[in-house]
Length: 328
Ligand code: AHR
Image (cartoon, rainbow, N blue to C red; front, side):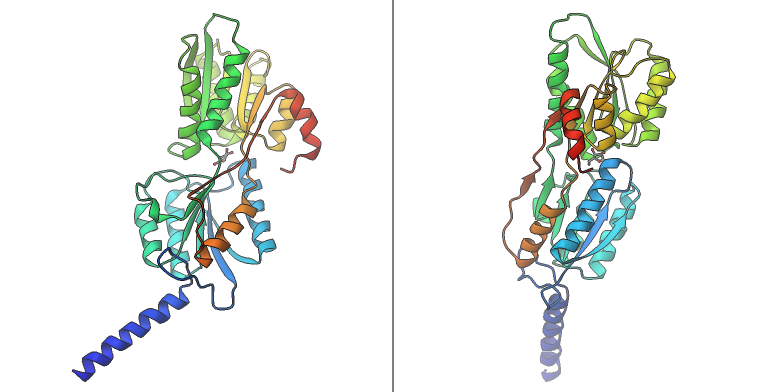
C-alpha cells in the first residue's frame, strides 16, 4: 500500500516538474518561461515563395531580437508536412510558445491538440486555419484577406463603371487551399459577382511565385486572345505575368489592366511605372505585434482572439509618392 502511495506521489511530482520545464502558458496553466523570464518561440514559416514572405521573415527575426525572445525558426518550403514536423519538434523541445503561418487552412487539428496537451500556447500569424475548435490557438494576427479581395473588386467596378461591354478577367490564385487564395477569390467575387459584364474566363493557381505566375499567364494568353484584366493574388505572380504579357507583344497596364495584392517594393515600382494599375496592400510587418502577443500569452494574460492588420491601397500616383519610404 505504502509503495502504491509513494508511486502516486512520485508520479504527481514528475507531472508538476514536467509542466514546469515545459514552459508554455496554455489557458489553464500558469505561465513559465524557462524559469529566468526568457521566452523561446518556435516559429514555422511557410517558405520563401515571395517578396512578401522574405519581408515577413525579416520582420519576425528582427522583432524577436528586439524583444529579447529566442527564436527557433524553420522554413517549411510550402509543405504542410514540414510544418507539422516543425511544430512537433517545437513541442518536444518544450518551447514556451509556438507561432506559425499555416500554408493551407485545413488539417491542423491533430497537431494543435498535441500542442494544447503539452500546454504550449499557439499563435496563428498571417494565415488562418479552419479548425472548428478555436481553443486550439490563442489568437490570430494577420490581414483580412476577404476585405483585400473586395478592395480589388471595388477598384475594378469603378474603373469600368461607364462601360457595358463584357470585361474578360483572368485570375492568378495563390497557393491552393491557403487562406489568402480562398479569401481573396471570395472577396473579389462578392463585389464583381453582381454585374454580368464581369466574366472570369480563367482562374488557376500560380502558387504565389513569380515563375508560376509567368508560366500560367503564358498559358492564359495562348488560350484567350481577349483578356482585359488580370487579377493576381500577389505581386510576385503579377510580376511574372507581366513578363509573359510583354513576351506576347502586349502592353501590361494598358492592353491588359493588372490588379495585384501585397505592395512590396518590386510591385510598387511596376505600379509607378504604369505596368500594374492598382495594388491592394497586405502588410508583412507582423513581427512587433507577434512578439507583444507572445509575451502576453506566455504570461497567461488574455489577448484578443483576432488582431487585424491595418492596410491601404495604392494607385499609380500613390505608388510614386510612397516608393521612396517603402520599407520592403
Ligand atoms: O499569406 C500572405 C501571402 O503569402 C502574400 O500575399 C503572398 O505574397 C505570400 O506568399
